[in-house]
Length: 388
Ligand code: COA
Image 1 (cartoon, rainbow, N blue to C red):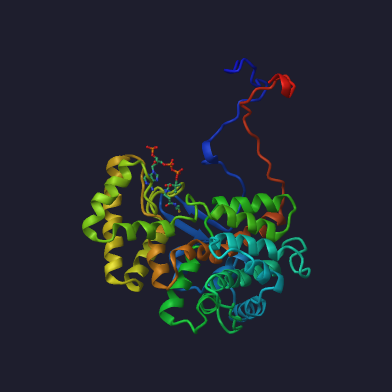
Image 2: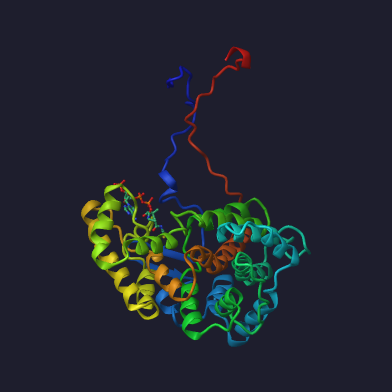
């Protein structure tokens, strides 16, 4: 094959299938969770998400993901105790967060904090990834975010209370007051819904890094970076931006039409795997109806209805439905979080899934190292800089 520059592209490679974005490629075996895209069903360790949401605590779900079964009462008590003991951040991590510019994105602060946790300050994260490290990281994620959230407002970090569960502790460390039931309970359900989701981009990132024999903090730091992107976890704050820009029900049609005419994607719709409604969206819609103001819920509902109609008209056959991010925006703002804390809050939950995947990967490891189809030239000759 001769390229436009006159050189020859490689031709001795076997013809490999080349799905764009690895769509449909099986990259690992996992017993953790599965997305049944056609049916719109999500299963954690054999339990349909509807079984767990609102029934299991976040910590029970974390235990389930890490250990493969639900905990007994004593096991849950032990886990809550350990999480409570592990929440305080090492001093050097606070120092690193303190040094960040106040206008940094909280996801950048989380990525930096996760990386700093793996950089000395004791040998807590030095070994091969294990369950103790997974629990410690899960315990510290809310504190990293809360410390940054407060420092950027000129406030000092708040010491965690060991008796709090994860949702309570996160809100307490963020706002420095005892969390109300009407805030931490919906947050807890949100955390159970987002804990794992098959071989998504950030989970794949974590497993690739773990497969090289690297440490847990490196895997999780990489995963945070992958989650930040708007095509993955970065959408919910953009949903809030969209709803705020629409402002009221009478603007919905014109705003959505203009956005689609400009070729923009509507945040909170579509999914690589789901070809039916995301089951988490259905649960969050119900929660948003209770937790958010009637006006905001009405605006969300109207926007969702018209967006689905327009997407189905404009992209017939694409099967675009509401995804988890759309109603996350309503639920998380009702809990009191500002838009830029939405994706980091997703990470407070997903760190359980990421760490469980890393443990699964290292238990039966093989370096993840795929092939690429080489499409460049192979026979160029070096020309000295003076002659170019
Ligand atoms: N708004 C408008 N059009 C959309 C869309 C959206 N939210 N999602 C997908 N489409 C369109 C694409 O433009 C494409 O149209 P085309 O074939 O005419 O070019 C078609 O639907 C298929 O999209 P594709 O890019 O193949 O889907 P994907 O599997 O790569 O993307 C997402 C999945 C999630 C990245 C995509 O749906 C998206 O960008 N959604 C908005 C962001 C979002 O909500 N992210 C959170 C995900 S949980």
